[in-house]
Image (cartoon, rainbow, N blue to C red; front, side):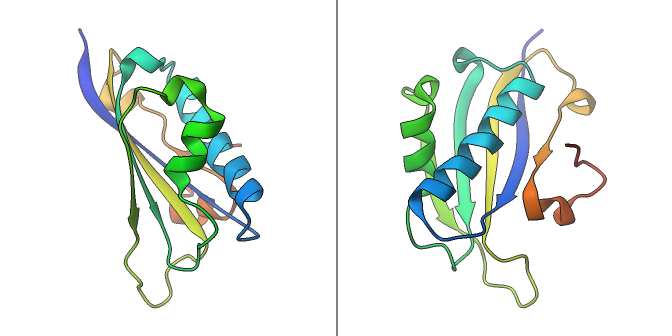
Length: 124
């Protein structure tokens, strides 16, 4: 039976450059899709957020450019709150999808420096 689920992901960047951001966003989104067995028809929406120190591009823009299966999926960008001590140069995503996976079987993806956010969920 299909259920609506949310899958979290996060990554960090080393440089505020379009190609570098695109590489990291693509790796994060593809890892989420692969690890959870998701195809385009399962996707409802992707909500991206970025910390205020990222200026070169929108994560949703590079995701759509790099991942053709997102062509018909609604994507949105937003800014993270500027909290003292929060992880910098961080891009997060919340993927809403239809899946047969139980909530406890969803694999959330934390890459690069974002592993520090949820070391309990991170894997290579």
